[in-house]
Amino acid sequence: MSRPLASAAGPLRGRCRVPGDKSISHRTALMPLLAAGPCRATGWLDSADTRASLAAVTALGARTSLAAGELRVDATGAAGPQGIEPLVIDCANSGTTARLLLGLLAGWLPADGPGVVLDGDASLRSRPMARVVDPLRRMGARLDWRGEPDRLPVLVRGAQIRGCDHVLPVASAQLKTALLLAGLRADGTTTVRGGGDSRDHTERLLRVMGVETVAGEGDLLRVAGGVPVTGFDASVPGDPSSAAFLLTAAALVPGSRFTVAGVGLGAGRIGFLDVLARAGAQVEVVRDESGVSGSEPVGDVAVSGGELRAFAIAGDEVPGLVDEIPVLAVLAAACPGRSVIIGAEELRHKESDRLSLVAHNLGLLGAQVEERPDGLVVTGGRPLCGGTPEAPVVHLTGGDHRLAMAMAVAALVVTGETALDDGECVAVSYPGFFEDLARAVAD
Figure 1 (cartoon, one colour):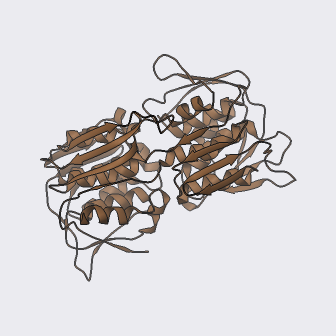
Figure 2 (spheres, one colour; figure 1 turned 120 degrees about the vertical axis):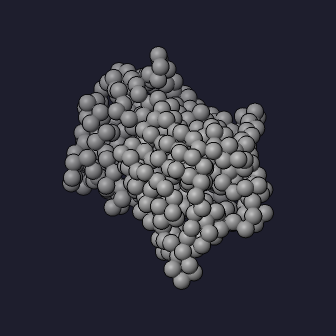
């Protein structure tokens, strides 16, 4: 459904809390399948994506409840699907649900059971899965394409898997997690190298569950199969990727100062703050030392607008800010000079081809953007112009929540009218985004 976007009449002011971290919420829903006791997570994000994970563990036999942001999952005694036909699990638009379940189910399902078919919507069916399936097959997992190779649907059947040494082709937290979770049910030791600066939420939560992912030289991780896995009681901090859109808006709109409270500050999640500082914004971080979040660092982040300047994002930074690149490209369009983003080819395999759509949408506003195979070059400083009330510039989102939020931030400094072809897709990660953005501008 088309949604009109608003420009900012003044600077952003005030503070807010963003919804719980989506990556952590997925894990606190799925990983209880491996636990020998009940699990609890407060501050859990209730969104379209995380609901896919919750529905999956419920379908697999776990007892679940969700009320006022408190999730409880008890998978004790859950044995997976029974009968003759495989259980079909709809992962909807959630790549995290699908990829983590591939690894988790590979050694969890009974070998004599009918198995599970993982499927999704048209967008998820277009996203690559061989990067997860191939290394799991090396461990002895029984995974079969049910249609086009490298794409969902995939049939997962139980098997006795064995530990292997893995080198990741991309620094992907989803792939790293799938292999570590498979390793917990494997014979022997599983090692994973190549995760780089990707998110470490899985390693942190596993420690809370009594499992040590032993770090080796560089980014090497080891996990032993067959170790006991306990339940957990965790607190989910605010999602830094959701916070990034509001904080980047504060950097973009002159005279702004805005604070997001209680946001996760994990090292693999806040690379965008370094970019905001390089672009001229004032960034202040106050860490909460009380430890209320359990396994995750948390604190308040304030951003004030400054004199903008061009910046660069190098390939080794991308894993730590991969979801923020669309809105950082919007910021680059306002920064005088030439901003360069490289090493970001992974963005072509998200909910949409984010590089292509960012370049297209900024171009509609008159920005000078060069699309490259692995990134973007944005020559910024030009005024951004929309359309008329009768004929607004309509941005293509590809059903991608990150694109929708990025172009809503761009609209704050656009002269003229703009709209989204689909505003409802923000419910994937941040259902109240438009309301929070409007309050920030109104304050």
